[in-house]
Length: 358
Image 1 (tube, rainbow, N blue to C red):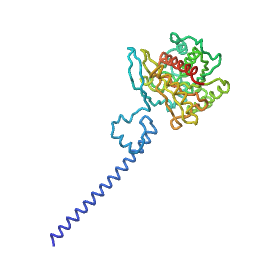
Image 2: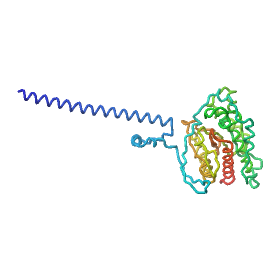
Image 3: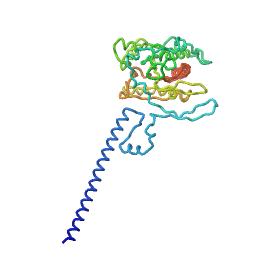
Image 4: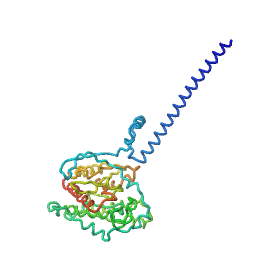
């Protein structure tokens, strides 16, 4: 009897162990599934907050990507291969990464915007106004709009400034000023266009001051600039192109290009896709970008499309098909770099206006 009982006990223990093993496998599988699901949803939320992390096309694709090197997650939004001519006149193929600008997401407090830092130079206006056009550029005697202004330049974030002209700071969040700001770049671009026979109106309205008077916050900037654009278009039916000039908050290595031995402030176009007619704005912007890629390779970082979940989403571009945000340089760029770029942009804008199919 005892041997049989002993044998039965061993079998029972073995069966219990097998059951426990299966149970452990099932519990582990459930735990792993929960972890993977949580990881997926956390990653999905992270992508919404930071588009630079890339796009996850499917659940399975996410897990395949986790097996790769972590650097794969930091893919830029887009990239373009261009050919540049260096000082040695040898062509060099480079890869230009289109980076997500953080300027739209940064919302300074009104109290900080209304406090001006001391300027590094007293006559800042004169410094920008004294920039001379490149040799060979004189007032266009062939083309002329004969007194008609057809380009309207304005500045929704008009106090965006440049750190080289502000004392006591090197922080991008401090780069705001009521005098030394992006409106001076707009005026340079306006003068460059006028020299090429393209009538241009530059609106330097202090949006920040107007926000303060109306007791509004910085988020309402586009509402105020919309009033400017609609009013301008109602007063002048000749306006055909609307440019909202900004500067990027990225640092100099992301906003500067060396070309033929000289530094240029790089350009980035922003097209809002939060309205039905955005494809017309996109087509217009693609025309400018292609001309820049041909005449000044690498100067344009490309076109950034932003919907309402990524910012304003419209940016007053529903008012006219030839409307776009143009970011010229960043917080670290100098007047010389900004000037070279405004001349290049004026070349492209005038070429586009005079030679496009109408």
